[in-house]
Image (cartoon, rainbow, N blue to C red; front, side):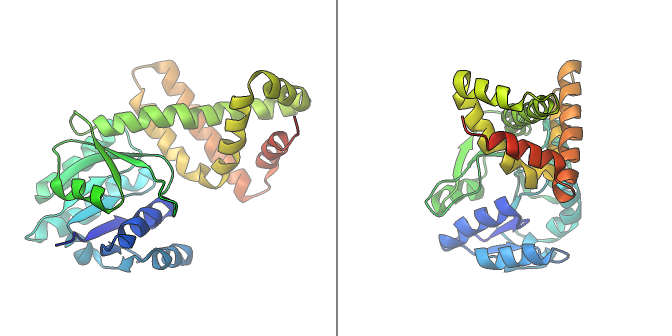
Length: 281
C-alpha cells in the first residue's frame, strides 16, 4: 500500500514537497486550522488535503517543515496525538535547527512511541522540471521515510545519530546565508560611502562569479528574511563554542530582522541593495 504522508506546514517548501508527493499518487495531508488564506490556497493548489491532528497522527510519515522557531512547539503539540494512535508514524523533523534543538524535538516525540528521524533540507523547493532539494537524514533508518525516495524525494542517509543531519544543515546554511548577510552589509556600507558604482565595477572585473551569486541570493532573501532570523539563532547555538562565530551569527540574525522589517515597510535598505545589484558592468 502507498504511504500516507502529512506535511506541516504548507509554506513554500512544504507545499512544493507535498505537491511532489501528491503528484506521484500519494495522499498528502496537512493542518490548515489557523493558517492564512494564502497558505490555504497554496495547500489546495498543491493537492494537499486538510486534516485535523488525529488525521495527521494517523499518517505513515509526518514531515515537519516549519520556520525553525516553531519546530519544538509542533512536536510538543502533536506528541499526545501520536501517543494515542495504535499504529505509530515516522516523525521526520526537516527544520533548520541546531543539533541540540533536534535532540530536544526527538525527546518530545520518542516517548509517544513514534519513530524519529533528524533531517535537513538542502536546496530549493521541488520544481515541475524535476529539480528538488536533498533530504539528509540521520538517526535510526526508517523504511517508511526511505520509501519516499520512490515518490520524488531525494533522500541521503548519514552515518550518525540524531543531530548529525542538523549539523550538516547548519554548516551549509551558515555558509550560504552567512555569505548573503556579509554581502548585504558590505554593499550597503559601500552605498552609504558613495562607493557603490566603484565596488560594483571592481566585483564585475575581479569577482564576477561572486557578484552573480549575490545578484541571485540577495533579492531572493527579502521575503524570507523574517524566517532566517531564527535560523541564524540556531546556527549561533551550533557554533557556540567559537565566541567570534557566535557573535557573527547573532549579528546576522539582527540584520535579517532589520531587513525583514524594511522589506515589509519603507524598503529603504532593500531598495538600495537592489539598486546596487541592478547596475550594468
